[in-house]
Amino acid sequence: MIYLVEDEASIRELVIYTLQNTGFEAKGFADGKDFWLAVREKAPDLVLLDIMLPGEDGLGILKKLRSSASTAKLPVMMLTAKGTEYDKVLGLDSGADDYLPKPFGMMELVARVKSLLRRAGPAACDAEEYRRGKLFVSVPRHVVTVNGAEIVLTRKEFDLLAFLLKNAGLVMTRDRILSAVWEYDFEGETRTVDTHVLTLRGKLGDCGKLIQTVRGFGYKVGESK
Image (cartoon, rainbow, N blue to C red):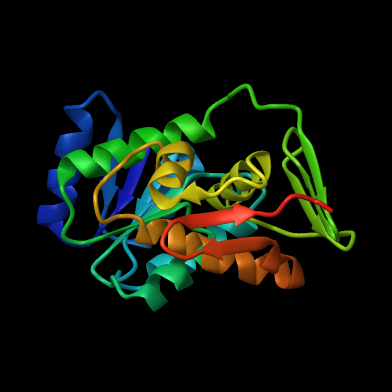
């Protein structure tokens, strides 16, 4: 079940119609009040969340979702007209798994929804652990620590970090990262990768320097010495 919180009726109806006609169960809500009532009755598998809402805004809803143990890992995609880099960083840093600015195409929305649901579902992950100086990452336990202190990452931030560590020493292009971590490829959308790298580096503190920018190509994590 997918829940959409969107106050513009025309957008809400179009998104719900599209999702239902591509094989998903979906419900729409005009504000946070009705959304929370529905969550108490049945938790969704994914939430599509606008930022500008009457009453409680989307970022407030997102923070509440992330602060509750029952919804902390729930995939959330922000759908919003606020499309500046600052707004993207703010949304992603608050715990969003993806960010799609308006106006957006319905097929792209469906592709991103499918990608998020695949990543959120049970999957066989490599039983891998990585140590790079003060950084420790356990893929099977989904744990990241810096100097022994646990770091809370969103699902996409964790997947991005694990992917770069798995390919340490190799330069990963933005297109390659987008395809591997987000499982879609839309021309011009590689800024999504840059935004996630920015927030990830910030959360990792000094260890963020391990993620190196290779100008004109992409990103890499250097091999351990």
